[in-house]
Image 1 (cartoon, rainbow, N blue to C red):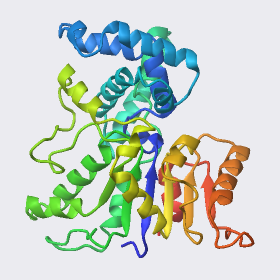
Image 2: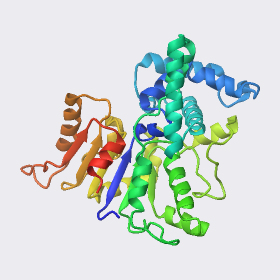
Image 3: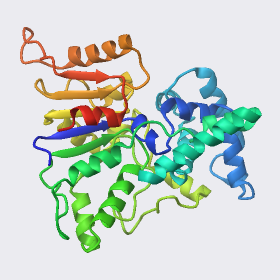
Image 4: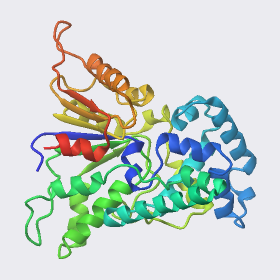
Length: 354
């Protein structure tokens, strides 16, 4: 098991291996006619869209402004345009639930990724440009290795017997996520429930609830094991009521100050011996929410992915982290223990998670 306090800080890229869009992928879905609007009107046609909390005109106003703003982050765009934020939250909720319905784990994930790639190749071969764009902008690209599977199997190493659940009560493992989705919580529950079938349900839930998973900007809805009295099943039927409920659970960058989990997340970072940034874009606005990198302890080991970036961008990111860590005195230098690499989440864990 883990021998020192380890904090995982997750960005959108951490969910990409399971069919969720990256930040840039979400922008494409929202800003183009063959993305969000087509799927939204198609899926909710006949359900009286015009009587929902937002109209089609509201949606078009948001998508048009977001596209022309050229701001890559929808979170930052909503923070800059609070009057448009309610529409943006509804759109995000829809896309998260749509990705959830198409999400896969384990061997099913590998098979689905293969099938989707074959479909894309066929569309390219036969020149179906419209469908190719739709698939390319949707969740068709399952990107990155299966780090949930890898981490879970590392966490249960050495646990032999029908009643030997992993113990998260020591607080040595925690997740701080900027994502709205519930894929990690769902995966861990399903994995534990089927790894230890003779363990009572309440013991599985008790074990999971000892594990800190903090959502900086909120979560679309709790799962049953998180809140048995007010939950939403994974892969639910999407309707306007559910979208409004999920939108109400989402916060923008500046609304996070009302989030009671924020101080808890900052305290976890202050106490960390190791920090892993997974699928994280290191956007200044997201870093500042957690007072990063200033809160990172001077001797903390830091590892981060920088998938899709070049060597100069990796170097700039690493230097920003190093230069931002507070030292005991102006003359003290931060030790050389910050690793940022242009790799995916799985490869980073294989290299550095011990």
